[in-house]
Every structure is written in structure tokens, then in C-alpha cells.
Length: 265
Image 1 (cartoon, rainbow, N blue to C red):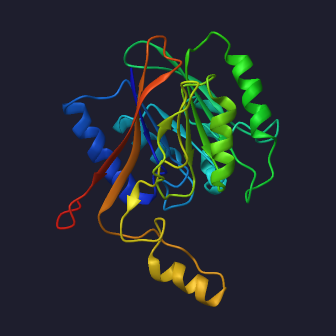
Image 2: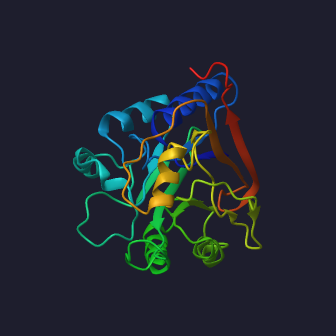
């Protein structure tokens, strides 16, 4: 089975290149399951029901979230209604939505998708490591293939999560920092891991935002309203191939697609 995980989709440029890539894959070899982090899909901050529907209609099967999940309040009712739109599972009990879902791949296999958020330099949520233990106990034999999105700032925390879950899940994929890391690998226990999948959004930007605005923020230390940059975009993803039984990853391959600068439409 092949699973494509798409890194943080940022604004309209990120959605556009995602639609383009999935349209292309539908003509060639569509993965058995497509997962994407969508917490920045609405103008770089949050996600709306309309945008969630746009991405799901394009071919994404599961959308994960993070610290910006709540930036568009209109998404809150949908989090309780749609089991394939996730928010980090280690938010306190009573928070709208869920951090885990069971998705049916095109191959017919059941895949558990788990969304967690780190605590280092982030909001101090419940312990993501113990939350992962609890979720794996709850999943039990319902799914042999388990994909974890660990949304976090600190590389050490994301690597630690991968090591902690090695041999118990299929892959642990880092999101949030928008910069792809060069460490995609399979750990000794058979778990695929990468510290950060990277961003799916505008190339000429600072992590998706107009560069001048970010520079002004750094130079003046004053609040600046950010805007998603325009222009051609790049999709950053990870393609995971599972072995017999689904629990182990047998191949981890970076997947990238860059729009032509002359014609980004």
C-alpha cells in the first residue's frame, strides 16, 4: 500500500498546487490514501468548511490540524461532524473534534491516522507521548497501518516521538515548521520517520508569508498583519510504502512538485 502525506498547505497557492498534483496523480498512479495537514489552508491561518470540502473533493482523504485549527471559528461544528478532519488529540477533554480516525484506503485496508501536537515552544497541552499510548491501546486490532502527524516546533521532540513509537506505528511525520528536513528514514523497529515534511505553499515567501512583512516584524519587533505570499507554489510530501501487514514502512520517499514560474495558474 502507498500513502501520500502532504505537508502544511498554506493559503490559496498551497491549495492550487495540491489540486494540480492530485489531478495529475489521478491520471497516473493515485496513492491508496492521501493525508494532508490543512491548518493553514485558509489564508495561511486556519481552515473553513468550504476549504475543507475543496481539499477533500480534490482527492485528500484525511485532513490533520495543529495550533491554527481554531483560527476560523466556523470550522468548529464540522470538527464534531466530520471524522476525517482532525485536530491534535492531546487537547483537553471536551475540546471539539477528534485527534484520530480510521480511514479506508483505496486498497480496502483500514488506516488509523493520529494527530498530535508537541509542547516545546508550543501551547502546553496534555502529554503527547502518553496520549499516543492511550490512542494505540484504543485502536488495538482495528488497524495495522497507523500514521502519526506530530505537529511541533522542536525537532528534538518530533524525533523523540518517532523513537518512542518505533515498531508500534507505520510512520511518524513532523509538521508545523514548514521547512522540509533531509532525514526521511526507516527506524530500526520498522517505523518511517521524518522530522518535518515541509510546506505546500508559495515559493517566494518566508514560510508562506510575504517576505517583506516578516522582515518588518523581525526588524521592528512590532505586530504586523501577515498575508500569504503570491506566485508559484511547491508541494512538499512524503510517500510511504508499507510492507505485508501494513505495520512497517518499507520505503520512505520525498515527493515534491514545483509549479512553473511562467505559468502558475
